[in-house]
Length: 435
Image (cartoon, rainbow, N blue to C red; front, side, top):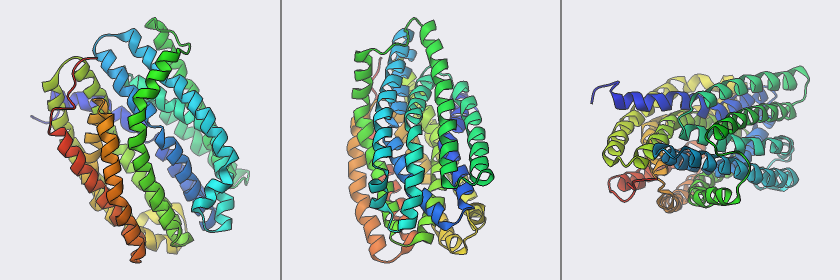
């Protein structure tokens, strides 16, 4: 199959706009990291703790996007437009309700939650401030997940693309002004992000509501559709919980190494998240196109797309790894002037760079199986991989290998994910045809 074949054009048509939309969240965190990093090591370490908690909570709810993309894509591929939008709105209403509950929980329990990770009282103070204020953005974040997933399912990639660009520019401008212009400290970064998230959420929902009305589906909440969205998301919730548990464990272990290694871990995690979301653009193509081709009853087309996307995953991973390795010595000063953070960061980033080709394939296969609705397998596979990762991470910390050891354990984590996903895609069990 030649480069830029019809299959490549299909993948690119979804992956390229999805790339920009996907990096919106880590790009906002990158901006906050750079802005807060200029305040000093303690605020940056506080951001590391708070953002880990916040992204863990929001990350656990990524099923709102993935499950909605897969379900809406199948119905859209089968020509059942009104039902596709009914499922889409069910996902949005579920996101709003779940987001409200989680926001209250985070705001009320911010301090005790932070103290589970943070050893330093000063770091805990900074993290608590950021987390309490950012809790107000949680409903918006979840609504964005569901609405973006639904729009991808009906192949509207342009709207999430435009919204993400505007939201990131707004976030960077507001946070810089509040933190450095009005001297609001880490609170200013949180407030800027809250405003940007809500602007984006309202925009996406308005577009989705217009589409639902055109399809004759309406936008009022329907209990059965909301429950259907919740039921479909449970396996993906379990799958995501295993991934977030691994990240939370890594941050907890990094916190025991001291403030500078924890701050370096925050920068490394932010960069890895940025690369992960960037490569996940191909996984989004996998979710969207797999759902559509299976919904249309095309098993051969699904196989062809999967093979080609694996090639895209390898290529994107090689490029990402090479760029990260080349830039590793220069990235630290972008985030903080602390030399101790720079010294801890560079070797960890080199380890991360080596595993990027593996990560590229992992994201693709994960996306394909999500698009196929194979959530139950992904949940059980996630449990097995987590069981393999925990002793690696704890062992690295016990052996005194520092931040490099923790990120080497992450490499093992990705290799274990690759093994389970590759085995699954070689069979036919996941190739379920029809809506």
